[in-house]
Length: 229
Ligand SMILES: C[S@@+](CC[C@H](N)C(=O)[O-])C[C@H]1O[C@@H](n2cnc3c(N)ncnc32)[C@H](O)[C@@H]1O
Image (cartoon, rainbow, N blue to C red; front, top):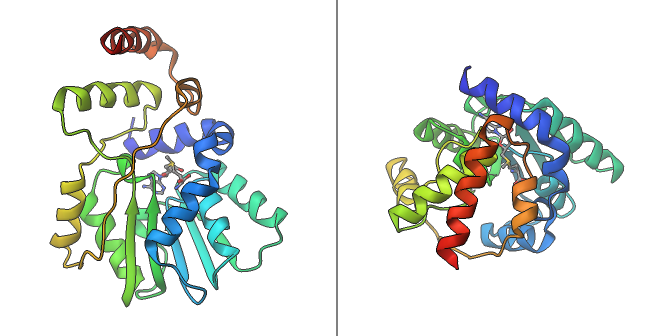
């Protein structure tokens, strides 16, 4: 099946679970990312692959205008519902592939993406689309999980991640993301890495796993726990 179709299907079926995951709703992480981006009241923000809109809504309560775009119509449906419950008038959500952003050039002062790059494949294209939609004096920002430096540890978590969520593509390294920015002639103002704790049970259950991968998943999990012991 085509990758986009898998992605759309996966997030359509797991939209409710994803939206209710404590990590998705964590306001402290949103506040830290908001501050990291240096967003101010007059900014207009494009949230690339906005999911169920929690971060877009968080920002809309503080700034001029926000638009969220996501491939999954179910994720966007929840985002719209969440936005209208708060009666926000300065926010809009569009169900669309972010590799073809439906905006004229230089439309936003901040173009950011949160927890989504590990699903993408054409990085050069997405960064150039983000750059196109951003004013020349604006800012582009990417937040995501990053690869472990130890290849064996990284390979373990990549396999785990793909079994948890079939739409996972690849976790990028900090170096790769840095190069991506530089190759697109973007000046890097700052970068930052944090370590967060995940509740194992909640992490496994934030996505809908495929039944056929369940046995492999359990084997991998037990192997990992045995090594940790
Ligand atoms: C892990 S979720 C993150 C959602 C949100 N940014 C957040 O932090 O809660 C990844 C999102 O990327 C979206 N996505 C992946 N590829 C996409 C694409 N090509 N176009 C639009 N959205 C995409 C998925 O539909 C999903 O909602």
